[in-house]
Image (tube, rainbow, N blue to C red):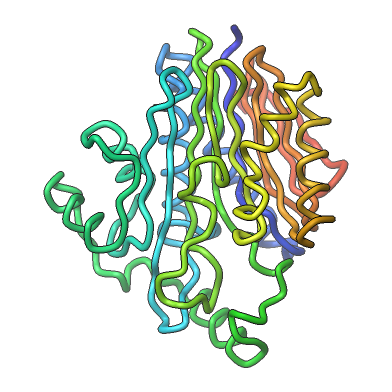
Length: 309
């Protein structure tokens, strides 16, 4: 098997040209760092955790320190991770004051008999595990403050345009042993109700990994993704013999036609085929394999560069 990692920076509307380049560099950096772990013999789980944590640390993306704000101007973050070897999984939701929710999700997977911890329970677990607490103010950006103000002026969260709220980050990987994994992390949707949880921490919607089928991380309108169980739906099409591109397109088009939801996904099959597909205006993505980095943001736009460049 040739190791590969694919990452995404969330479905999105149009970027300014200046921000687009920052987003492109951030997504490529995450793919390279995830691939470095694979190249050095590391596991797929380690690779996706690393790649997503890098994106959580980049304020250009809606996760970690770039998370959007809820109706109270606060941050509530969600994340999940899964090991396709034995279907081990970990997830957290409504977490605050933590730089890297994906790392906490990994601890849930590795250190507890559970799959999912939320809010105060997740916070207590983080404290017990010695996860560093940081002031929530350090996670709030000026851009996201302005974003919330603008959203409050235009619409309430319950009437929000699905196409505007698509930010998530995620990664999928296959290691040299053929093991698969995914991780997904998000700050949710701007101006959301307190306690709202979307698809990102929900196994089967925000992502899935099974060595017998493939690995996938999704992005888009969370409520729509939950309604169609997007991650598992796409892998079902793979199980039925569809190509990775066909499976992605069928599941995304079903979500669009059935519940009018837009989004995107990255996916790797058990045989190593991979893709990045979306129905939103754009979706930053990058993949690293065999010394090459593939990247894009808009439809029909892919750049290929050497890993060392």
